[in-house]
Length: 404
Ligand code: NAP
Ligand code: MG
Image (cartoon, rainbow, N blue to C red; front, side, top):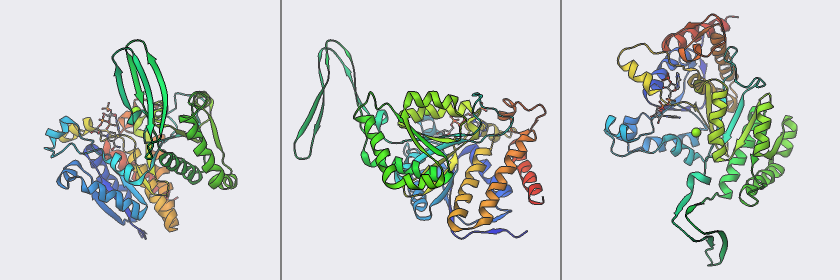
């Protein structure tokens, strides 16, 4: 069969450890046999980030801006142990943080649902996508350990010297104090990324804050979302048959639990941090979560939500058999190729992505899966496959689907 041709390259960001091993097998078995792959390759493996003083990460993010679509492998965020392990010149920053800052993007995480891996919440029939605002609030706070009695004040000094002042609390004894901020521009980018992604995926968008208690801070989030929605998106949402829905965060949590799923839940930074862990474990497995970074001007970076699966990599290095789940990484590839196909009007590329995802799901539903899923599945007859054999099984399913 002739390979599918591409017009514009996708940006390929290679990564570390076990996911780097899977990356190569996925390309060899599932992508390159079918697609005349055009990609601009960046090696974000820690050794190369160190060799280039992390310039490669910045270059890859700029390429993402230029071409619009990237697929990223999981990467190590260095800590003290990695400094010695990789003999690093510096404790390089998290690549995801660097890329997110350059694209000014929002991360959307969605579970891949299959029969046999059942959500712990009985009512959930469709995936719930979490959108997390990735700037500010408690993650950029300043704190004071209050030693004893005294007055705490919040002071803003304008460039013109004008002061705004509020008493936070008159302390009679020791306590704690915290200052947080956010920026209208960042909230607006977050809102636009969410509205665009809702239109893109034809799902309702929910947003929630605690605006009844936080009448300025949280209320600003609510207002910015509403203003942008009314001015730029209301009509398009109407045409697409989807809704934007705002409610209080506690009401949202209660509704999510009783919902069927199938919507995007936009969360402030802290809510998104906490709720995305709840959603991914309630859907069954971190290895089945996809993640896409979407910028307000429509640039996309697809990846798996999990890390580099270090423990499996060390087994692999010792020559032991591994059974690492490649599903989220395969879906990162199909996500990127589908988006490339949509943007360039290449139907074969979107069809390929749909069919490969279908092949992954059918393979698992037929009982062939990696160990992590075998441990939690409700399917009766299961064959546990190793890392490579699972990918080969997906290829066989894909080929069978192609001849149907
Ligand atoms: P991890 O790679 O997500 O793995 C944690 C554990 O979860 C694994 O040991 C494994 O459990 C299970 N797991 C995760 N993904 C799996 C998969 N695909 N198949 C099977 N099991 C899977 O997290 P980590 O080990 O804490 O972090 C390793 C490195 O990843 C760190 O250096 C961190 O900086 C990096 N990281 C990168 C990203 C990113 O690039 N987006 C995100 C998170 C972490 P068992 O061992 O019980 O089998
Ligand atoms: Mg968290």
